[in-house]
Every structure is written in C-alpha cells, then in structure tokens.
Image (cartoon, rainbow, N blue to C red; front, side, top):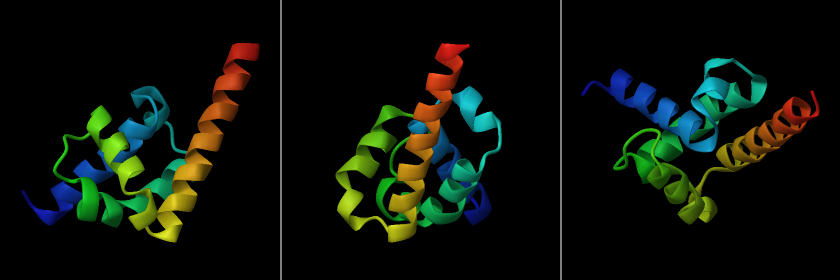
Length: 92
C-alpha cells in the first residue's frame, strides 16, 4: 500500500472510530483537526487495526498518554462537537 493510501486509511479510521460515517462526511473544524493532528499517531500506534472498527477507538484510548498533544486536543474537540451536534439534533 502506498504511503498516501495508508495515510488516507488512517484518516478514515480516525473519523469513523470517533463518530458516525454520516458525521465524517460533513467537513468541520474539529474533523479537520483530527486529520491534521492524529494521522501520525494512528500510523504509530493503531494502524494494525481495520479503519472504522471499534478496535481503533480502543487503541487510541489505550494509547492516550502516548498521543501527541495536538491529537489529544483534537480528539477532545471532536468529541465535544459530536455531543453538541447530538444535543442539537435531539432538540429539533
């Protein structure tokens, strides 16, 4: 697999493991931060797991202390955005 395909696979895994596929399809600042800050961490710690599977999320949780500060912050922002979006959709 080429490094570009591997990086794209990593991005997909990050987005799908932290949120739904539908949410991943719509660009957002938090999702873009995941792409920017977590691809390297995915490659370093979690690339052995299939993109989008629950194993990737578990891997990120298990390696939380090893993640770069930028990736940790991006994950926190993404989860906060997802909670906010979920609350908004439930209210409407």
